[in-house]
Each structure stands twice: as structure tokens, then as C-alpha cells.
Amino acid sequence: MAIETILIINKSGGLIYHRNFSESFASKLNSNDFLIIASTIHSVFAIASQVTPKALQLTQNKVDYTIPYIPMVGMESSANQNNRGNPEMKLGSYKGPDYFRESFVSWNKSGLRQLSTDQFTMYIYQTMTGLKFVALSSNVLSSHHTTANGTVDKTKSANLASQVADNFLRKIYCVYSDYVMKDPFYSMEMPIKSETFDKKVKEMVNNLL
Image (cartoon, rainbow, N blue to C red):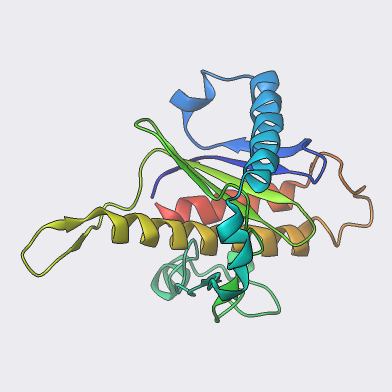
């Protein structure tokens, strides 16, 4: 999964962080474009929540929103860590080197979670407080699931890509909690200017390639 851009949108629809990881993609958009994208995502997310079919709303308690844990998504392998020999650069937190090791429940039960086009795929992870972590990917997972007769099951492949994205964005949220929310000089809902946070996000995106 190639991540082109990471966006973080606050609960009011304001863009508080964006970072490009593709030169070709970055050259096409400026800061104002990303502000428009963030507000549009926030508006579409709210609309999607309102137009959720009544039948689905009534059966929401019966729907399983559990996201399976996928090990080491966006994290550095032990072999690479040993080769570099620099423990200070090791990702992880007090919760462990992989941040979490169990399945988790998606808080986004009625809004937009994924948008697929011929050019890119957008994944959205929403926290309980309304903060949205958005990843723009140039493609989905290259590995496809095949059925018994050898045909490609695109539905399973898309589901796996979505689960990988949820695991990855949840870890970005963990990094946000460690390096932004614990910064005594950071003001809530304001743009993120932490160099350490930016560095960790870049490392995780590089490890995902």
C-alpha cells in the first residue's frame, strides 16, 4: 500500500495536519487545496451519517464493527532495527513496540470509511472524539485473494486493504497521543507543528511501503 498523503481533521472540519509523501502528488495541490479537501471530507462525512438507511440504523447493534489486529503494520521489523543499531529510532510506546496487539472496534458506524476511485483510494479513521485521520493511497494491496477455482476475489482484497488502513491510521492516532497531546505547548484543535510527530509519521509511512 503506497501512502501519498496523510491528513488530520479536527471535529470542526479544520485541517490541523497534512503531509505529502509523493513529489508528483504534492506538486498538484497547494495548502488551500488541502483546506478545501478537509472541509469537503468533513461535510461529506456528516451527510453520509445522516443518509444512513433506516434499516441499517435499526440493526446497528447487531453489526460487528470489530477491526482485526494485523501485526506490525507500518512498524519496523526486528531485523531492520538490529541492522540499524539505533534504539532511539525504534517506533512504539509504553504500550509496546506495535502499540496494540488486539482487535479494536471502529467508532465510525454511520459515516464515510472508504472512497475508491480509478486514481486513488481514501481511508478514514474516526476517533471517539470526532478527530479524523485520513490516508490517500495510490493503490490498494497488491496481494489478491483467490478462490478455489483460481479467480481473484476483489471484495476480500478490498476488505483486507481497509483493515490494514484502519490498523495503520490507529497507530498514527497512537503517535498523535504520544507526541502531540502530551506536548504542554500544544493548543487543542490547532495546527500540529511537532517535528517529532512529523518524523514518526514519515517513518511509519516508509515502513509501510
